[in-house]
Length: 162
Image (cartoon, rainbow, N blue to C red; front, side, top):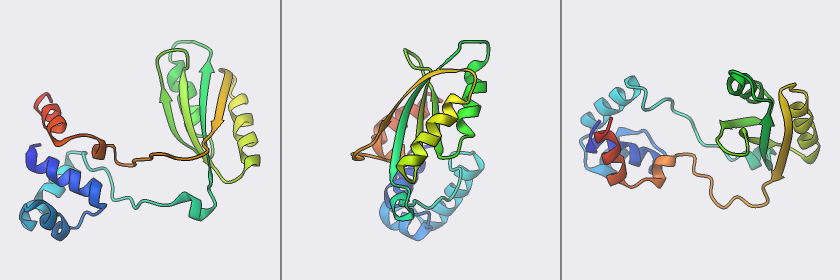
């Protein structure tokens, strides 16, 4: 991976396109090179898929719930509990964390009643001791492509250390 790959990846994220013509127009990298590099980035597992962004609110999914979850400490509990949380309907992100909270869980639900169902699902997991959940009132930032939050120089430094 090099500076050209970083430019291609940043364009993919910013412009939400994988079209070699548009990437060429944005970066000045020849279309044939873009095509080859995209293929290589896919083969290397850096580009994982060709997902389309969706506006969940236009599908009636209007509530985001952020939950802190604490579980009983046991060998491998983070994997067991993490998988159980990840399997719950509406849960889109599960993070095992350090500090006072074992897991942060992000879920998206269609209505208030579904929040109650979600919390009941947490409580049905034997290893979970307690939860604390919050409704999101306003989303200030939701960057689906975190590469947009990193400067090109930061990314170049990171690939030098691979």
